[in-house]
Image (cartoon, rainbow, N blue to C red; front, side, top):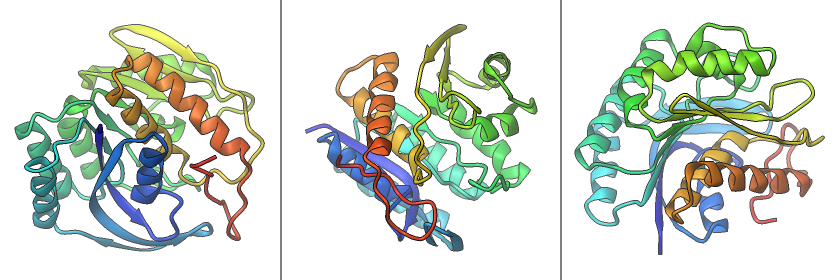
Length: 257
């Protein structure tokens, strides 16, 4: 059985974070594992508290996973401190982790910056070189490149700029565009577009976590990066179209549609 590790925060309401990741992994019939970087008190209406794990405990979790059930792929989500990022980078490097998909969670749904400049810089300097793919949405890509993104041409400009710090590829997700949900993969100087329909469903909590986890799962099946993204995007579309409606705010997806 293929194995995938998520390194991320916990969402007690089950819509995002490691809960969304593990549901996605189960739906893809791989064995999911989790290293928790933080506990969050959140639900469909917002985030009300964050309790960080210590860097030492994150390191202990990583050692337990890699020395026993070595993951075929790794997904990285919420990492909120430079110290934890340093630990993750050190462990992934020493264990020679493969198929690393990084979802750089930097901007909240409401548009607020979640990370300070020091932490953002550590992600760029330490985790970007280890990632086979990073999956920022448009607000996160804007933070990474300092360019305002309004259309497809802007996405290409941003991808080229961000790629200077990457050894792998970048997938800029177009869900924040007004009329389309087209995503751009920029890898080795080449552009690949993934066309997507705009699903009229406000309940999209955890889409970023789910997409990056689905890509990691597909990579373990031996699919190419392009095909892994294509199938993951199809999976997300189906989960949105299932029209699950839970909670009082921006609800979760149906991972098992």
